[in-house]
Amino acid sequence: MLKKWYIICLIFLFIPIISIFLKIFYFDYEISDVIPDKGYKLVLEIISHTDSPKSINISTFAPINNLKQRVLQEEGFSDAFNFRLQKEDNNRVMSWTADRIIGENKMRYTVKLKARAIKYVFLPDTPIDANYPPIMNKYLESSEMIQTRSEAIQKKAQKLTKNKHTLYDKIKAIHNFVIKKIKYVNFSGGLDAESTLQILEASCNGKSRLYVAMVRGLGVPARLVGGIILNRSPKKVTHQWVEIYLQGNWVPFCPTNNYFAELPNRYITLYYGDQVLFKYKSKIQLDYSYSFEKITIPKTGLSNKFKDLPINIFAIMENFEKFNISLNIFIYLLMLPLAAVILVILRNVFGLETFGTFLPILIASVLGGTGVILGILLFFAIIFLVYLGNLLLSKLEILYHPKMAILLSLVIAVMITVFYFGLLGKNYDVISLVFFPVAIMAITINRVTIIMEEDGVKRLFVMTFNTILVILISYYFINSIFLQLMMLSFPELISFFIGLNILIGRWSGFRLTEFIRFRGFFMRQQYDR
Image 1 (tube, rainbow, N blue to C red):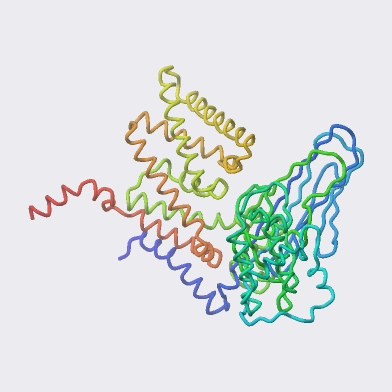
Image 2 (cartoon, helix red, strand yellow):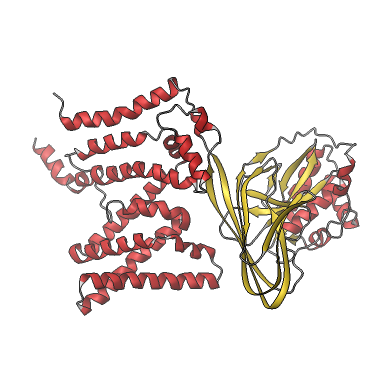
């Protein structure tokens, strides 16, 4: 006869199995339906300052809709400025205007967009089109910064493409030259194409201008593209690359990061042409920064398609988007039961003791904001500060709770100091430490103090190592794209995790660490037999 706990465990384990079976074979449920699109939330923050009343007009560029990216939702905001968004040629220009304004004022633009990697098949036998439409003529012309008719540029292009018989080989030769022979340097200003060729070094805009000048010299339309690479946040540095008109398509090339007829999804287009990022006439002080976060964007219309499902996960996802709540929050909620199971296995089966029961999961969940390395270093620094503070405070013989308050104040004071110097040095990685929640710090301080007083420093060191190991493992599972997809597709797996926890909760055998600890004893027992 089965015991009650065993029956309850089987019920929780089989509920999701039956639900998943019905979804697939009765409701025609496909995992591809639930796969959300990956996108970004991009925020531009601008700060202007004037010492005397002035009329101000500040303009810059908003992301463009094209084959690589699509703008979903955007908003411009400022207490003191009027915001306007309009189309100018191929670009989308946003502007903030105000009459007779003084002091410091802030502007903010937020946009959610889908972005994907793009790659073109550039065939070696692609011919040069002899009959471009008239609109392409401006992309063949010489300009002040892109000197297509420069004698030096023409000679260099002829030398590079000599004995190259296909368009592919000619562009590849130009591409390799700009990549390998033009040294990248981070100039604050911009270099024209001719100067770049002369000194053989430039930033992304100089390299791109030279690239465009040489390609136009082949009789092929080419243009500059300006945008931002979403590789770190926040940032001020924007980027320029190149697009070449091939067989009716604008094909991307990046002569700085060596992308040939392709771009990754983190390249976001802000404008076409050789543009200035910000334009403003009044003499004002202007500061700005871009920040971003990866977001998950649910597909639309699926809540109606699967309205007969007992649990309509699509309706929940669409409501998150409707109320402007990041779907990432919902995904993290779904991943926490899985992370809890992993933690239970590591503690109850492997025997890894950590600070607190769920503290490693909480820390793993915030590493996306701080970064893995910086977050782990911060966690270790908190433990070290508490260790030093506890040694000093123990001599004062004060009560436990006042000691906790002092230690928390000490950690906060050190973090504020680090944050302040990060702002002064514009070290945005250090600034991201603000994402570390105070509640996690308070729990860590409490646990570290108890272990120091009750078990000693050696025990503290072992549990610190175990906790960091469990944090890293939990972080891997929480951020696994495959596991996130499975939880979004089948949220009823939470029931399976409950059953698994019941099963592990009945575990009464040795833990793995106990086998290692007492291996000598077990070996003697085996020998005696």
